Image (cartoon, rainbow, N blue to C red; front, side, top):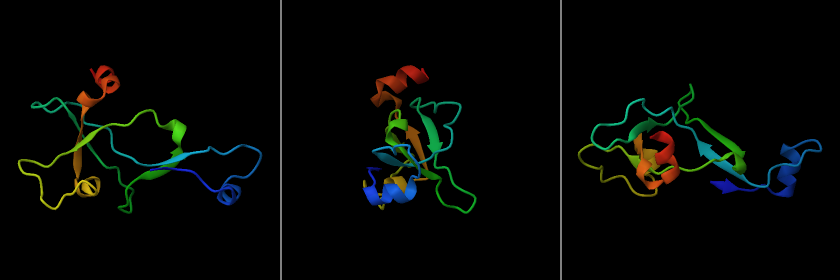
Length: 111
């Protein structure tokens, strides 16, 4: 999610003369992807990162820190669960594959 803060919120969060970022991004962190690509499709598996209390590891960062996004494919096994919907699959799936073939920059970097 990308958002900005109202002027009043900026005053309560940022103190001093430094100008706050104009836009922020809410990000959920993932663990490092597997060291070896899967044999069948050459994609790498990743999982959500969790805090010690079981909540997902997440942050609010300046949007300019975002370098690029990746396309994630849910790891669903031989049959995709019918309960998964496009709007909540990131919440439902336990693991994902990084689709290296949709982003030329990632493809070149990884290979």
